[in-house]
Amino acid sequence: MKDFFYGLKSGIPISLGYLSVSFTFGIMAVSMGFKWWQAVVISMLTVTSAGQFSGIRTMMYPGHYLEMIISQITINIRYSFMSISIGQKTSKRFTGIYRYLLGFFMTDEIFAVASSKKIVGVSYFAGLSLIPWIGWTLGTTLGALCGNILPENVMSALGLAIYGMFVAIVVPEVKKNRPVFITVSASIILSCLFYYIPVINKIPSGFTISICAIGAAALCAFLFPMTEEQNGGNDEYN
Amino acid sequence: MNTTEFFKYLFLMAGVTYLIRALPFAMITKKIKNPYIKSFLYYIPFAVLSAMTIPAVFYATGNVYSAMAGLLVAILFSYREKSLTTVALLSCTTVFIIELLFKIF
Image 1 (cartoon, rainbow over the protein chains, first blue to last red):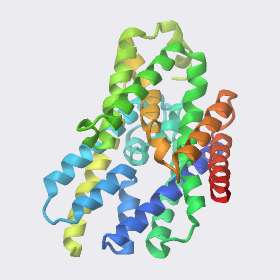
Image 2 (image 1 turned 45 degrees about the vertical axis):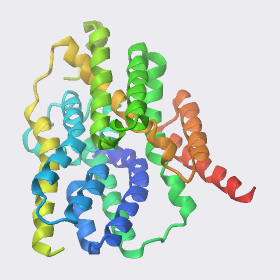
Image 3 (image 1 turned 180 degrees about the vertical axis):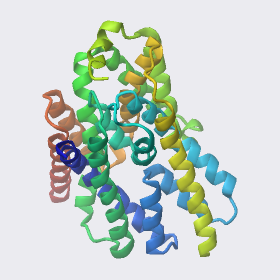
């Protein structure tokens, strides 16, 4: 129970960031002709930002089922790597049905927070997922129903919440771990190339994130494979 | 759009997304021993987060300058190892103040 509440508490900053993003999604879906409950159901069942924004665009045209499948796979494939990564540090009890149920909640942000833990337990992960999921659903509902309820400057400020959190996870590790510093630098360089160079900046951003991350992490795994000593610390928890 | 078409699309979208997340999570349960794969999985979170942050963060707010200021504040306070919530709130507040200043002047 203590772990569950600790998870809930860790989920609060995530849900703050989610409110503003899902709010925008709600507004956009309704403006494209979706009913408010359709926007809400999409959010409740998929919980992806890039995937949803791209998905509703495909949904405007009937019959593009294959396009929907391919675009969702390319945009969301990064979640597979996150799932494998978190799957390596789960507690003993975190097996079978728990993995099928809680795997649903693997988002960029939940992954980010969970990955900063040495060991991830069932209660903790459940707590961590719950409030962001509620925030995501609530934000979509509010956006779809009441449009511009928050003043623009508050929305704008909330837009940074998620990135602030990412920075808070990455920087402390960069400070003390040189291979991580190089991984991060390589990833940033790749991501800027994909963002600013014409033609390749047409590739959907969810997919480019996967390419940059896999490229940078693979490079550094090849250059700086961790020694047993560095990994040793985690084994006592297994 | 009619409701049947909506639910067909919803089923595909939610189904594909769920499988992408849950299958690797449920299927790959053995501890990976290979040092290269272990290192790859150790580095991947930091690589994902930095690729998602830069350059997207610069366009996440009303203008590039407020975003840069917010990012700078986030880096500064996380370098001092403040908590996620503290860093997130401080960087949001910075954006809010900077944009307010832009409006005034």
